[in-house]
Length: 129
Image (cartoon, rainbow, N blue to C red):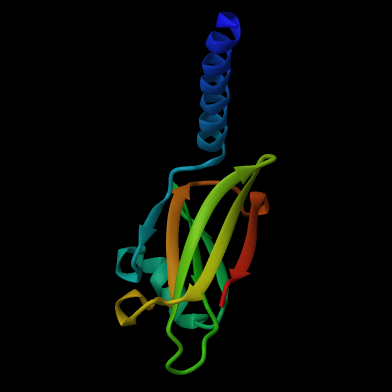
């Protein structure tokens, strides 16, 4: 009986530790940016193609993913981007949801992360509205 009482907590700790490492293994460091923080060349290109939903840019050091949600006039919505790694690909999820109030309204989002080839990036849109 005492062995079971000792093995149960140890097993639980081991399972939780493995799960935490697995989650950390799939997440990748990225930074959210505003348009004013983008390199000038990217900002100029954005002005030429303002209606693209997803846009990917690479410079010498970084990959930038920009997402612009389609929305109706006066629609309160929030947009977020998340980045994970799955099976060697970088998965960018654009998550669109109803904004709780005017301060949370965002129609576009930009993230920057380490430079990767565009062919290794998978783009998904998750609309929760």
